[in-house]
Image 1 (tube, rainbow, N blue to C red):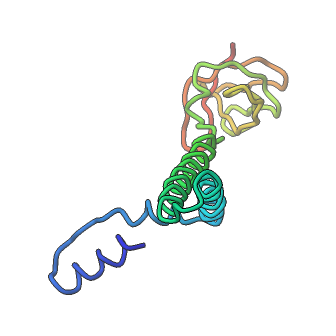
Image 2: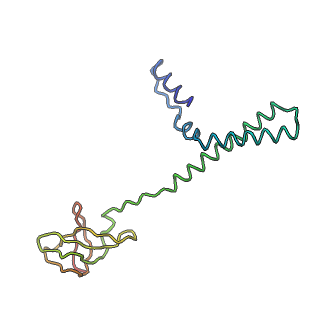
Length: 156
């Protein structure tokens, strides 16, 4: 948060373009990060006070270190969770070279439909014949290209 405020001050007063990484501070200041800091601040401080009851300043320092480490660890853990996300988008170009079966007849001068396995998933796409010949339902075809949102196929 300090980085974001300082960036605005330097930009407004001095006309400097300074990037102090304000995004990192907002990632650390989540509810989970603050709760982890408070919990380990208390546990670290309590441990020091239980071993030496006169070391109040040492207890605050130890609690701060423990809380900071736990906050950092919590942030890294949530960063790991975000990295586990996947993009399930299937590109039509991935189907080139694959074989499938005609689902709806492909007329000589029109568009039909084929089912083809792409990236481990069975998909149905619009398709047209490469040679301009009719391809009957249930015939096997091979994808030779993509034309917009339509696969270009030939008999396999």
